[in-house]
Image (cartoon, rainbow, N blue to C red; front, side):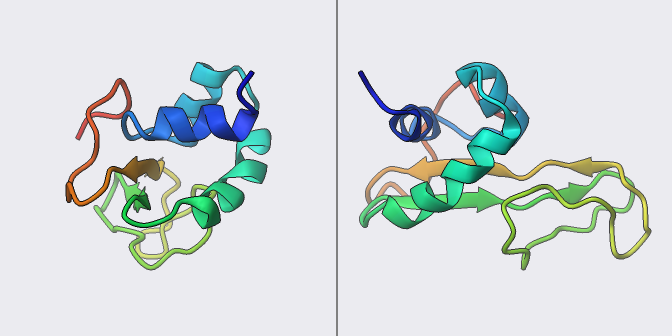
Length: 107
């Protein structure tokens, strides 16, 4: 039987998911997933890689590209609004340069 981390990694290998989408798909709390993500991030080995699609302010369009925390930001530093699109997470396949197709977030 696969572990919770293996289940998360398997899902991320199939597409891009937000924390909330992972929570629903895996029947785990967001807090539980946040405990596992740093370990998954470190355990993904080349040629595969762990990719974070940055969060974005839905009010002014600010992109949180330099953010290192895995949790979604609370407010936009530019406009101070809290209407934020959650970051997406995926594991890219070897040398493909693009994300695997899956049931996750749409671009």
